[in-house]
Length: 117
Image (cartoon, rainbow, N blue to C red):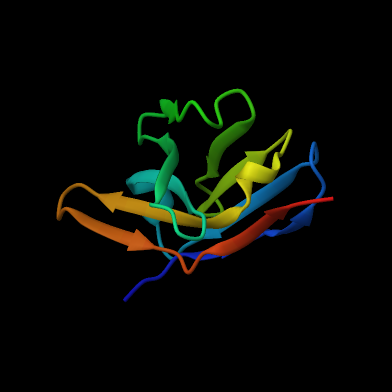
């Protein structure tokens, strides 16, 4: 099974920035709808950002104006630029690829983001 590999999480102070990366084999990132989710302890998984094949994007109200989803087709890598981070952004962040042709989801293992002073 092809798996997405996430990196870039860590500890950051409020107001700081991080960039998360999600690398995959082949052309998964360029061929499919890509998403970033997060899940805080005891809470439901939350969809944060979507990047469609045609390039359009969607953001949840909680991150709009602060986070940016993007990709490098050449590197087969998805990114999430996270600015103006708040303590409530603390969560495990997951990369997702939705394959519409087979209604299949690839998931990364998750990377921890902690926003604290």
